[in-house]
Image (cartoon, rainbow, N blue to C red):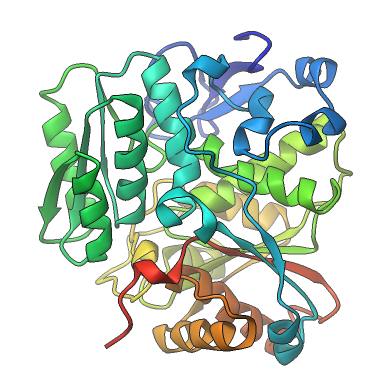
Length: 391
């Protein structure tokens, strides 16, 4: 246990059950699985309540007992968190889902939900004495981690595919990151980073789910949704899934809130939304498999969904199945049409990854999986302005 500011106790491996010391700079488990941070929920109940949290500043750090940073002086922040939960009445009526809401992460610093993971991940890396951070990225994560690393005074190595949105390359450079451009996919960028960090003592590999604290930042999406709905959950939450950290984090957050007794035992059905051109989670779900298989020749305009071999794919599948949810893939034509439809109906220009959820909601309503009266929350992971229009 780290003290009153955070109730962090340990790191657990969900695959082999090994327990790791949370006070040390740590990556993944020796078995290759991501590690999950665990908290003393009894301590949290003793020191705070939903009423206490409501009186705190509207940033994700209002949930600091359920975050790993041990004190306010270690927090690296741009004021991130508490993004809008917007009703979408015209769009919802048009697709037959009148209780449609959108959690709009485009309002965050650097324009995407990656800011949450970067805020917590960089804060904890700096607190534990990392000499620097290195990561592969499809764009937005690199931009966010470069900005937060600069704010923390940490050097950052960022590798991204040449096809990533150009603005994210600029964001990394202006924040002073060491940027490497790779002719390939995110896996190729990952190999470059791994090779570089082997010769950099004290640097931390902060690739998706290769360290435990990006997930803790992303889980605050789930904490905020529950608080914004009066400490209850919607019927359905729909998440774009590339690496899957957002969906895994939301599921983790809801489990912690249930353990605290702040929400009842009911959980939302989770929907993992992927692009048809890169859908390893959907394929595994439909086949009844426990793990994903690498997706051949991935291609989609929703560049953040181009993750052909997600490390946490098994955790996404576990969460979707445990929640009685589903996984669905939409085409690029469907998601770009949905992006335009939402902008025309509600005035929100969202990213292609978020638009995939809009397209998926319409498909699930047509199929009857969504019956109509449910309260459905779509997760928009970023602002549309960061993406070039389709050719």
